[in-house]
Length: 204
Ligand code: GAR
View 1 (cartoon, rainbow, N blue to C red):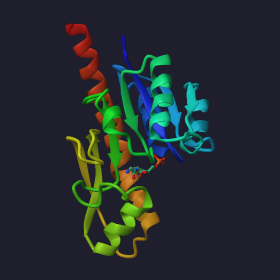
View 2 (cartoon, protein in one colour):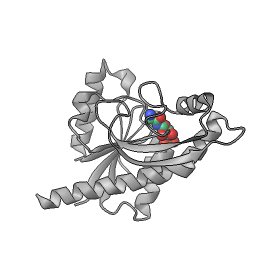
View 3 (cartoon, rainbow, N blue to C red):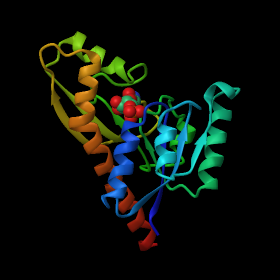
View 4 (cartoon, protein in one colour):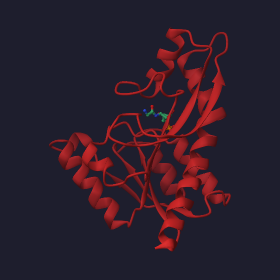
């Protein structure tokens, strides 16, 4: 049985698209994207999932009383779909220690910098690239890591460097980091972890 994967999104979903394309190309042989869960009802990522006939769920944070209710709703979607592994692909909420402890080494995140630079609470999306440019670093990149209770603090799986160029804006840099690093690393790491989980199941 393939490892059942949920991809968590909040926005455009280009990383989700990279995962969908990798799956279609046979590059995630031991995993199956079984659910796309969005924290926002209007996320374009949901349209990408629908176009690929992948089940979707929306758990809107702003409609929940607190983080406990938010995560309770997420967990019920995960169990309804038999999810064994989670990929955070532009998911803009921090998951609690209680949540991450339920999926040790089974949650992945892609972050648009070379961790430990420009990461942790407050560093997400374009802000990460704004911070890299204003610091003046010459090289940035992307990191795929396991998710634990420390924001962007889990074990690193894959990293790739991307050069900053003269005249870069946060938007231009974001696009280059996606094209040269994120869209390559995330499907690769997802395939690795899906295979590991599948093998653990067959060993039991
Ligand atoms: C990506 O660059 C991803 O690395 C980043 O948000 C973007 C989402 O784009 N994630 C974070 O900053 C998490 N801290 P996408 O919706 O097009 O995949």
